[in-house]
Picture 1 (cartoon, rainbow, N blue to C red):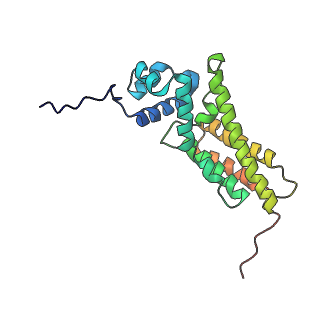
Picture 2 (cartoon, one colour; picture 1 turned 60 degrees about the horizontal axis):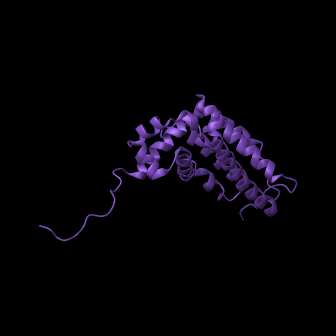
Picture 3 (cartoon, rainbow, N blue to C red; picture 1 turned 135 degrees about the vertical axis):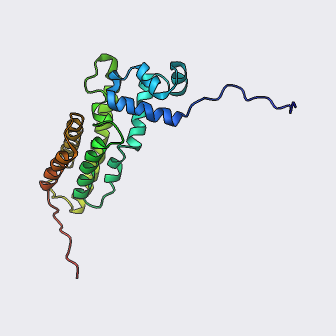
Length: 210
């Protein structure tokens, strides 16, 4: 029976965009920007190129969306670490999170934000620049957090927040590269623990309980 209702204009997408984005993220994570071909991406996403372009834009735009998803998902330990009450606990959460995220069974070894375009040539220059800015942004967040620690007496007054942030991020990035090369979680955890043992002491130690 004709109800008089008309079908909606345009065909609905026949796939789950969130699931497709998750799958594309894992392709970029495992293969890097240039290593991930459009054929690899669309096969993993279960769609054709026309659908990919319509839903996500070109490869560069898809990569940016995947990086956002990675930041909010597997790499979200970085944001959580900033909320820790002391600078040392921030550093510990950052390094421990890096070890777990880059060696976990839930995703490829390594870090999308580090290895995504390290070896990219000119075709991948935009992705390389995007990731460089992404890493620098995280260094800036850490630097601000460590400046707060200096101001509160949680770090020595002569501590350099920017250098501490860069040092911590360099170790975390190195952990990711080593993980991608097959170094085990246990070994990388030892690296993280060694770094934490040399962390600057607080200038205002906690008072003993009465």
